[in-house]
Image 1 (cartoon, rainbow, N blue to C red):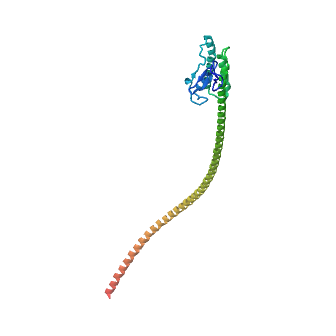
Image 2 (tube, rainbow, N blue to C red):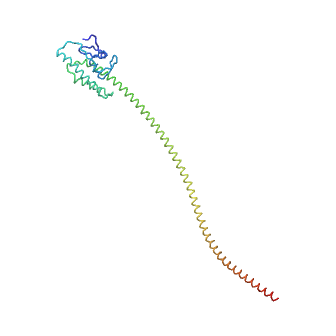
Image 3 (cartoon, rainbow, N blue to C red):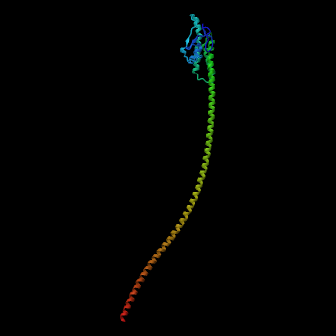
Length: 269
């Protein structure tokens, strides 16, 4: 029996009921605490030196060889406790822990205890070890609750920011739509004014075309009349030219006749 030897974690006296386990840094643990802590490669609780379960040494304080019946009777609680603790560790490792799942995890651990433990099983060492498990579970639940509250607060802030962003974009969209509507109305009014001005110009152009067409027709009639008159004048001119030439010829003939008569008179004298 070790003198005044206690587990570093649960502070229970180490001995036949709680076999001591020694780390390489020289600190003592009970079998359950050592298995629970160092199976997940946690550091030493005293000096924080990294430890592995395979490097932890199991001590045997009683060197007297016990009879087979007492060894079997003593080992049964230890083996049963190891099995239950291993089941609890696997349950904690495999479970995607959420704060709401804590009750289900506890029920599954208790169910494992009920199925594993025999009627003569000493549950006190196991309960001491389970205290550590539940302490870890409580810390994990608290961490997850804090994490969940932080995530909820982050989500709430993000949602609030998204709502504000949507409101800003919505306000900007309303402003843009209002500007587009005003621009559309102004453009529509401008186009209608341009249409009215162009229609007035078109009406005036049509009136000018009608007047020009009427004037053209009048001018064509006048031109036709004047062309007829020109033709008549040309014909009259030809007649007058013929008469003129005939008169000229007659005048020359008269002049010649007068000249001959004068010559004859001069000869008689």
